[in-house]
Image 1: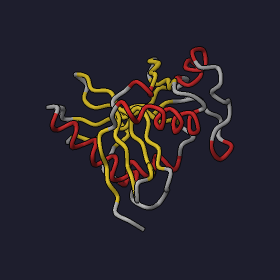
Image 2 (image 1 turned 90 degrees about the horizontal axis):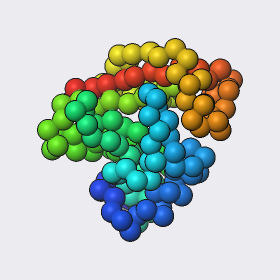
Image 3 (image 1 turned 45 degrees about the horizontal axis):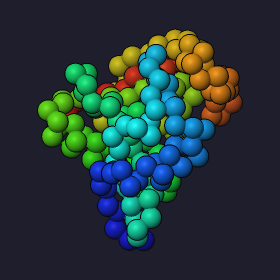
Image 4 (image 1 turned 90 degrees about the vertical axis):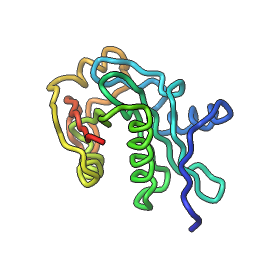
Length: 160
């Protein structure tokens, strides 16, 4: 397996980003904490190995810090997600942001494990937030991973 390279996405990457988001999220619109994002239009980091895109992280920078909007590792359990999250922390620091944060859902046990093992802490729970998000994006299923009803959003953060 070749070396992993994480780089900032550019305009030429838009089709690749759109394809990855659509495959993972059923489209480019992502809803979290009452905000609908067109993730294909957000700043992004791409992970590549041997010239192939193996991961994508989209984000939004604001006064609240760097929010990870989407994180997708095409190659799981190979360091792709960790490398993207680390690069996002570097991007946050360069932008003067001191916090990296994100929203995930109550059913996403694999993500909760992943993020907590990388120093992120659960700092908020929004009961019923996914039910509200469904009003904006009706394609969000009622049942998520492991057969768990998909209802709540969890906020995780790490100070950088």
